[in-house]
Image 1 (cartoon, rainbow, N blue to C red):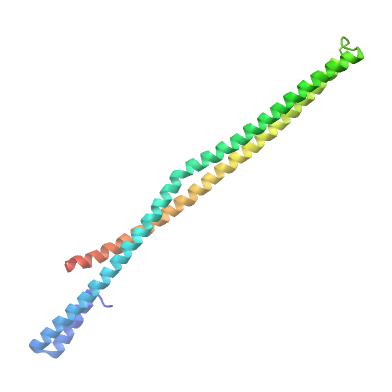
Image 2: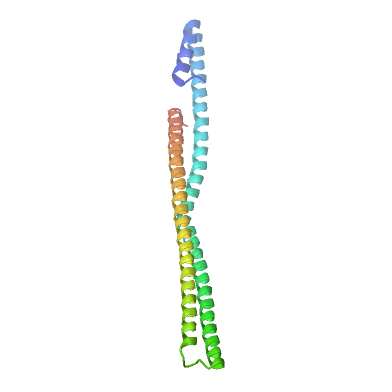
Length: 196
């Protein structure tokens, strides 16, 4: 559809070709029709741009909400990882305590039965078994700490990735919003010319 300037020029050209008062009237009418067509086209584009702005605005609100909730999600993931670590460590400590207590009782019973209670031989064996149990618990605890550390690193990577993705989407939407605002303001200019 021709623009406002070309519509007026075309109307004037037709009016000049016909000549006289009739030519002036026809030329003016054609120019007016062309101008109205341009205005209607601009109004349609403005409505379309505003509709897109509304949709983009909803997306932007969703991104802001997701960014706001990201810290909460990361906190929940971290808390869960720490809870699993704490539960596993507690179970390992409980089992080690039971094992050490069992070794002490078995050693005392063996010493009483064999008569070596005062010799220190049984006590030495008990101590070695207890040291082995404590060492095994130490390895288990280190393993649990390694797992926790890896999970926490994974959570931080998740946070960084999600934040980067959301920020990139936020920037893209801001650019699209600016484009639609320019389109809407251009259409608004045409509407203001005709009191729309």
